[in-house]
Length: 236
Image (tube, rainbow, N blue to C red; front, side, top):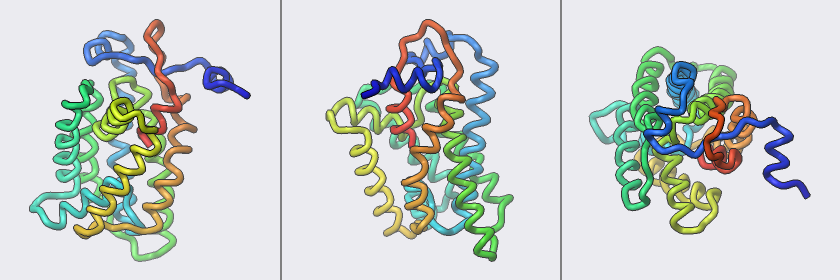
């Protein structure tokens, strides 16, 4: 039976580092890491717009964002930003510390999603809608790996999952499932789009992130490592 260390070895030696907010800025390779962080977050916003315009089902949290936008005088991207900062408030009792990537995640994804939603029209052809959905999920996995691999801290929702995991002792998979079922249910009631794309996202995003993440990690020698599989599972 192979260990996690053996599996990491078989994929290469790159590892995520366990860094505090200040250490993230002092760890070096800032130009490469900042470029990758911003690129990953903008790409993430694009993929959310692709899924929304595909109309076959949003990513779980975007069901909630879209539902809120239906009832509030705000765009979907603004709803994403508002929910991100509400989630960050939940970090306080969990004693989670946000990094630069956490704050950038909360802002840039929502802004870029609104920009791309203004540029991408809803296609009428079913094949085009399927293509938008499938490509959106695939590139979302790449975008997630890019921002995690930049080593500037987890996104708001990622940190909530790992924080609850540490505080409750429940598995990340169970915590993630409970959170996403809850936000999908609330978002659906509010008018968010749930469909086959939502299910496909839930099934495919974990393997997609695990596929891309080992290649996206910017190595920071000498830092304490974290488990790559655990980080991928939380982010997915």
